[in-house]
Image 1 (cartoon, one colour):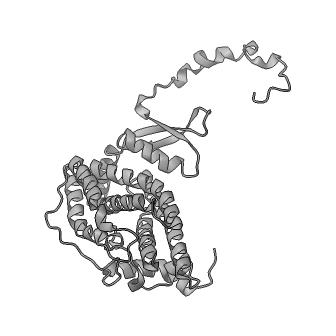
Image 2: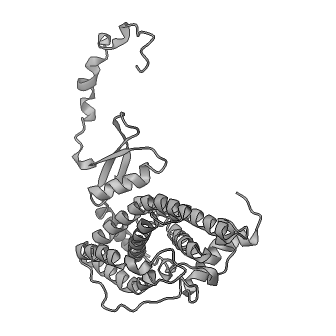
Amino acid sequence: MRKKRIWQYLQRSEQVNNEWPLYEVFIRGKHGLSHRHVGSVHATDSQHAIQNARDVYTRRNEGVSIWVIPSMQIVASCPSDKDALFEPSEDKIYRHPSFFQIPDDVEAM
Amino acid sequence: MSFTSILRMGDNTLVLGQRLSEWCGHGPAPEEDIALANIALDLIGQTRLWLDLAGNREGLGRDSDMLAYHRNPWDFKNLLLVEQPNRDFGITMMRQFLFDTWHLETLRILSHHTDKDVRGIAQKSSKEVTYHRARSTNIVIALGDGTEKSQLRMQSALNRLYPYVGEMFMTDKDDLIDMAALRPRFDAHLSATLNKATLTKPESEFYHKGGKTGTQHSEHLSHILATMQSLPRSYPEAKW
């Protein structure tokens, strides 16, 4: 029994070590729109990642273009820097264009 | 335009689509699992077009469901290659690669066929199959030129399945086009891919036959059809 459990553990740790790298997936829904982050896929290389992204995220006609980027390559802000980075903008309401009247004939705002 | 010639196209995509669907929920990675299911669905979609057309040309009122679910193994005209069991992922992908390579060349020629309906199905399918072939080619290269273990398994997959290649290029009056003429382009893609995949084509050109003529299917066909047909045969009026 114990032997079996060790074997299972070894198998599992081998699987973790052999996990394919993660890629973040961005899809452009329509021409003219920007690519939006939709999720991530595992893949062995960038071409494989495009194919997996196509199969996982565009099955229902969601897109016209795909970007993938190795998740390792993304540089993210640190959660502990949140106050310094984002709080200062909270009280600066004059930065929002909310004091203007939008003319009626402007459609997409 | 014989009934059998259209049936051959539809039976290939039907049997392989059903085979691939056996992977659903068992793929080696969620991404591969969903990709295989997508390809299975593409093939079943193509089947519907081919078999509806076959039934229409036959003129006995049989539609694609009738042809898929209410025929016996010896009436199926699919290649022996597509009824071979999945076994492991390497064998499944090698089978897919060999089929996709033949399929794409066939559809390219059929896209200019004199029959409007055949042309239409071929043009629609070849977009899907272009993707299928790109995907299976990449995987054969990745696994062939991968680790020592994966290389060994892909070589044994090729050795196992190569004897089913020859039947794809047998040709007779019940083919829509001259299949033998497709061989050079098939071989070109095959050797380019095997080269990159560090795999070696088996020396023997012996091949099994009897699938596309329906005269000698392997034992695997009856089993897969039993699974696929049991429900509609037990409950002929069943609806979703």
